Image (tube, rainbow, N blue to C red; front, side, top):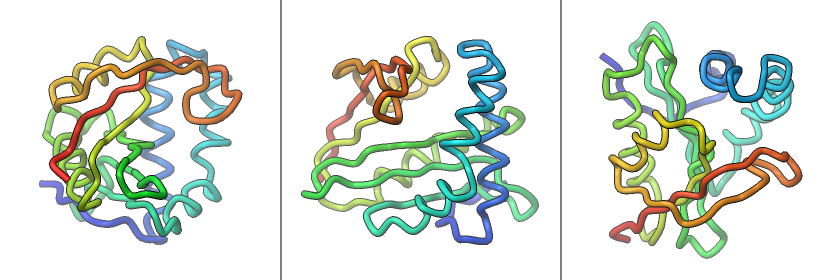
Length: 165
């Protein structure tokens, strides 16, 4: 049984393992192994995870069963506090289908009281993720040619969902 909690610096290695494992399993088919390893080294480096953990406008969550981290989620709020951006929601392949993604998503939604909208970017070919997000009320609001980072060259759908605030 996994429980969702705030991540801490002691979780950095486990978070990186979840990110690397899920990126290899999900995106190698889209981008090739070399590109995936390049992205993991950049976006999911120890420094990048530590920087996300220390953001005062963010919340980093882990799903923990006491033996391992089965999933992670990281979101931040806009300067005006009205928009939450979900940067990461990843569940280890062997842990998928147990409600971990659902629980992480629900907790992220509740971490930013007063926010009006939740937004995220997802690869247009990642049908399982798109299906998950649509099942949780997200709708397409646009597209970008630079997912995750300026000049990444990675296309993405922009999904959003209004929040109760």
